[in-house]
Length: 326
Image 1 (cartoon, rainbow, N blue to C red):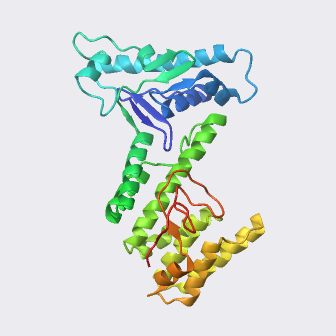
Image 2 (cartoon, rainbow, N blue to C red; image 1 turned 180 degrees about the vertical axis):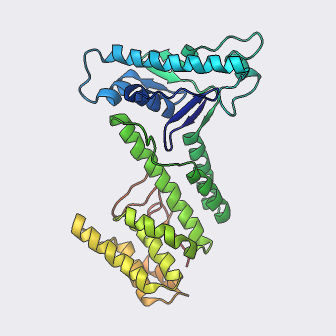
Image 3 (spheres, rainbow, N blue to C red; image 1 turned 135 degrees about the vertical axis):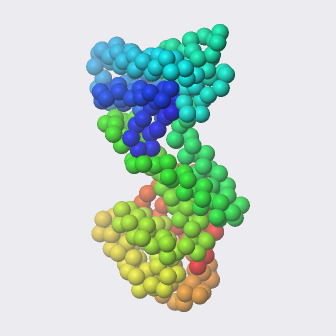
């Protein structure tokens, strides 16, 4: 089984789509696919479908949606047997997988109930060792963070760029989500921002400040109160010999924070501004160190907003005390 949720929802068994077009069954599959090989409680599925006001027939209706999904799965399994394909995904080939799918000699025929399993308290989507873009993203990003910790900035930049390339748009872009999916979409977006911030840090450490300017221009406009991205933008501009524009970025951010949130920029960002005011391009890093600098570290968790680092990439030493060197 191949599962893609980092963009449009796409779930394939034996290369055949099992993604329904009807909104409610689509929501059910999306939540099951995100948590593939784990039990999703019936209560979570009901909350996703109907929020805090489920109908009296909620469980029966959910069972109907599950039956609709199993009908799609059965069609895909039958197509796989007709084509002689044993694997359940692009990387699910092999004797064991073939037998489980009905393609192996003497093996038990894999049924729709084996793929979408009913368990006490919930349902489980059995991927049978197939691919998941979320799992691959987590693997690549985690390896990239470890490379950052080890000082392997070229490797970190490459790995994090590969992780980010798995995204084709917002998670579940074509699913009308309820409470559960909206929460998961926000969580996934934070993990993306975490990887993005770390990749930008790696690129800055590799002296790619000019190549980052276009991207940071868009990011600073999109995340208008995100201090760390603005700090990275200021550093990239300053290192490109555009100190006046770097200071303009600070002033725009300060105006937005004061106007929309009633807050001043963090002490760390103010120190960075003073460092740029006082230091020449050749010694802003040293001035930033003396002033407290922009700390960048790898951690878990994320936040978009004033004074928050994204995924441990923090202004003012959140998650670490390392500096983006100029």
